[in-house]
Image (cartoon, rainbow, N blue to C red; front, side):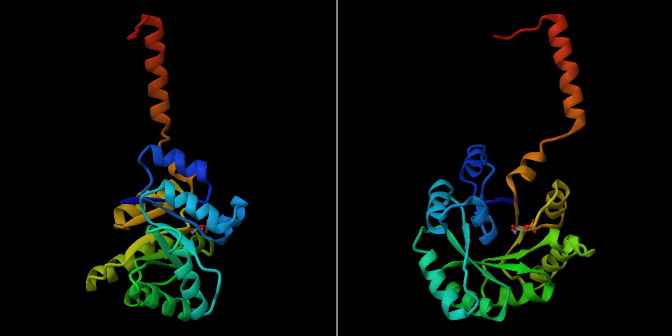
Length: 217
Ligand code: G3P
């Protein structure tokens, strides 16, 4: 499973990238706002750092302007994936930009039918939002499973990019279901390392190292 980092925080991306944990990056207007950076400048910096796809989201809502924005965004670097919302106009932009040969990430997906439309419009990635479905008492992971079934039934190559990941369990469940990619905030990815038995076991080993005077260097 590929790991994308859901942030525009360049130092946080760099730290995970150095560990080989970053297969791509996703941004959105809220994350750009949080970074306090200019969208074109910070996106270029991320593209220079990371080899994989870097999603940059359009700001318009009409297809024509979304396509123009997308064509400007792809000039930043070869690894840009243009992110468009899952609206009718967004699907038109997806079709035009994917026909041009660009990667397109269709975002704000909350239903299997929306995911089916995005695949037919040539999306490279579909971004179902797990956490926001959980927020309204639905099960975001059920949506990931439904899209996996539908895409596999018909051989769609659109990659399922599970987004709005809030917990480490979201990640392991997505891996079991067969999501192609997860995108998560750096802190959630870092939390995957935590286990109380690891800490307890290490404490016991450290106590024995100290009492036995074990040293290597
Ligand atoms: O990738 C989408 C993500 O940024 C949304 O996450 O936590 O705001 O629902 P969240």
